[in-house]
Image (tube, rainbow, N blue to C red; front, side):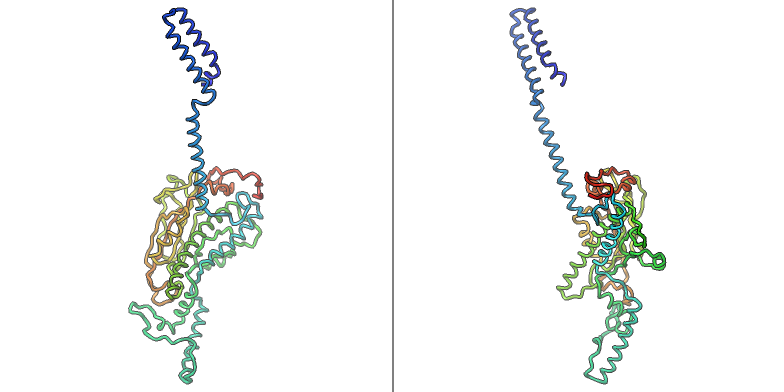
Length: 434
């Protein structure tokens, strides 16, 4: 086409020359055909001229441009929508993707504070300690002494009301009356009535001796590189990124737990019922664990079965796309993180928790499995209340759109997974300062 435009004059002259030759050969009786040739030549010239001005393809080009503009607008709308579903920001500015040692030390300190705040927000507690039992034993003895004094002096008031009634329910549960002279049971009930749920705190300071002696599994997934080791060493960039992603997801989980329990507590308050672990739906967070690695693409991973419910041990995510219904693994446009939540809760509220966690987020429930928790008839240890509860394990995946997150990924992470991460924005130096 470009050749035709450049040689339009030569082509027209050739057409006219051929027409003149036709006149000389055929004579006057060929004049009508010559006129047709001249009109044909003019039409070709006009079309060639229109190509030069862009008129012939203007409609096609315009339609294609509108289509491209529409796609770009749709993409921008999708990204803006994703930003509302990913309300995540780094704990501190300047640490990702290339923060210096000082920024990473600051991140470590901020992470410790943020994770502690997450744990505290659950209004959680633990079982009674031996000292609590001893204190309750002393209190029971004091009540007995006061009761004797009351018999001698009718005006005396006992330290606490004297409960009456059977010591056990028909189902064999210890009653308040039955527990009034049981220091362990009373200490456990008094302790449990002070909080909303059970949760085991993590350790911020690294102490290998204490950890070796402790059998308790921390409920939250505290990144080991963020522990206070007593040194000034900064964590590595990829460790900071793993900790940051883990914090984002755990924050979503904890907020979902809190919402479920707080909403239930509001209803109990209106009904005049005490609000404590025995009456609220989520009784205990045994563990939440986030995969440090991205899930491999489907076909490149291993077939890994999910954790089973029951027991006190932590439940780990499979980190596999092979045996989950979504088959999602990292790709050219997104990364996938899997996480597993293990709790003791009212079975009827599992769907409530799942809906709260996944609504407005890119979290998907992959699997749920649960088994019955036997009733605690003696009220010693963890008290979950009168309603039937289950030990439940839930596997989730979270899709992290590259358009949102790759701008923060440290180069070490991009290289490890062969991710084409964008270059730092103009005006950002090697340390991430602006």
